[in-house]
Every structure is written in structure tokens, then in C-alpha cells.
Amino acid sequence: MGEYVNRIGSLNDLRIYVHKTLCEKENLIRDQFSMTEMGLMRRGRRCGLQFSMCGPRSVRLGAIWASDHNLLYFYDACGIRFSKIRLRQRLLPDVESNIDAA
Image 1 (cartoon, helix red, strand yellow):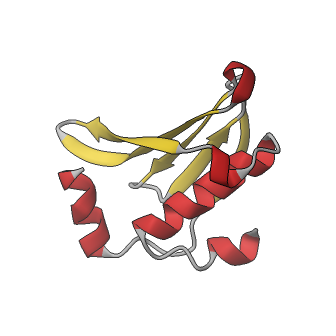
Image 2: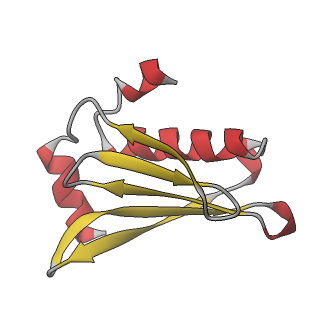
């Protein structure tokens, strides 16, 4: 997975990576489970995204991307953080401006 983290250069790459990682954590079939996202705000400006996925048997997984620090935090079905990853490159400026519109 580390190789893919190096290639995350857009918000879409980030979504794909988060979805893949969450599905792998609980052995979910990627095509059968969708993911939602919500913008996070701090002092009136966007500071990241929260990703959520609901699986079978009320399994709920999540991830948070803190854009200020360019970190991804992954949480399992019990709400326990199972991974913290620093992205190698910042998302492109035009992608970050799209977050504000989301």
C-alpha cells in the first residue's frame, strides 16, 4: 500500500485509497459497499474530510483526512484507530478549492 500512498495527488485518488483500505480492513467486497464523505470545518474554513462506510451487520468504518497536516486516520468498526498515514504530497490546489464547494 505504501507505493500507492506515494501516488495520491488528487481528491479522487484519496477517495479510492480510503475506500480500498476500509474494505480490506473488514474483508468487504469493494463493488458492494459505497462510502460517504463530509467536509470538516475549523474556524469557518475547510480543514479536511470525514469518510464513512457502512458494511453488513451494522459494521461502520471511517477515515479522516486532516488537510492541514496532510494526514489520514483510519478507524475500525469499534472506533479504534488502526492506521495513521502521512501523505507524501499535498493535494493539488485546484482540488483543495473543490473541497470548499463540496
